[in-house]
Image (cartoon, rainbow, N blue to C red; front, top):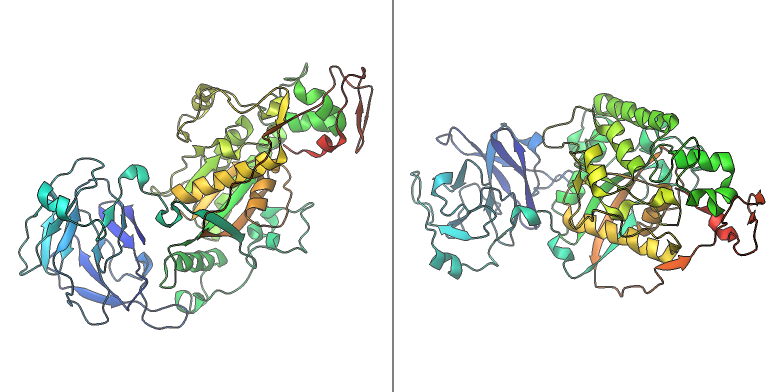
Length: 515
């Protein structure tokens, strides 16, 4: 199981659970170690029985360090010899198959003894060394029993600490495949009766359905919480309650299409067939450039609309802030994300720092709007944006004379989802992408088709489950893409174009692409 710390100023606090036994949460005030230990039993929000999950809002005191014991008796009920510590300043996640754990912060506590941070032993950044501490015998501070010999003898099956570079790993998915399900019954967009044409997230609370959740009984007994607050609690319970499984994760993916770009405006102006067979292969015309297109004024307005709506939802509906942000590397997405979230007052622990990922870019036809600018250009536009590991300086994926096949785009959509779910342990995620790629992402998530207009947003409640390894599909990665070498003689919607020469003609199937 994975235990993740959050940080609140000088306090370290933890949302932690174990899948067996009833528990007590023992709260210890960080700066007052002489305080009497307080037991705080948790209740299962579904059946009101003793449970193993408590969230920060349940705690009787703020700013606490927590000790967990998987026993039904009152604390102390020591069943395990000794305790353990970790020798890295930056460790913030533990994988613990054992029976007890405690938070590492300004101090570490086990039983009635206290171990100060400066007694932990080696503190090399990123170290995965472990050391044991003697079983508590008094209230005096213990000293660390940490040496290389003892570390070498300590079985890693007892506890495993991860360095920051690997904090988010989903251990259960190692060497396995991931199967995705779009969980129905939470958003209007899940329902087959909801028409995507003309659908506007900003008129329907992002589509969140007005419904009850099993956790409402204890979380909102007086009916004063918002729909988003109650939904957030339910999602949190699914991920961290007693009945959770290490092989299952739930995440909320908010996938937004970029605002209108100059390529969209050009397609409207020329018509889709002429756009596909000639104009899209150009870098622009006399009045506009659409190679790696920027937003039109209308597209910027769509992003500002999203910005205002998110601000309203955060303020009036207490909608959860996103924990992670992702963006396609294409300029129209990077700009849309920045306008949408860049000036929102966010919590310190949930900053707007998008990760730019190639997997979220549009299907790579020969259209120049699907070519990306170099990494330096993107960085200069948005210095705070981060790039996924291995992100190349120049575009290694786009080809001038060949297009990505539909099967290859399907595989790329699945691969980027797998990468996010394997490496990001956060729950509330924002993705800024493209119409065609969001269509493929929805397909990979087993969500119904739901085409987005420019600037539109779709939330998806995702259940990801580890399954036995599945065979990798085989497919052609690229295919020829026929175009005209000059503006077409005719351009007929649904039929394609007639080129000025007979050497090249647009395939009609290529007229249905969205960017």
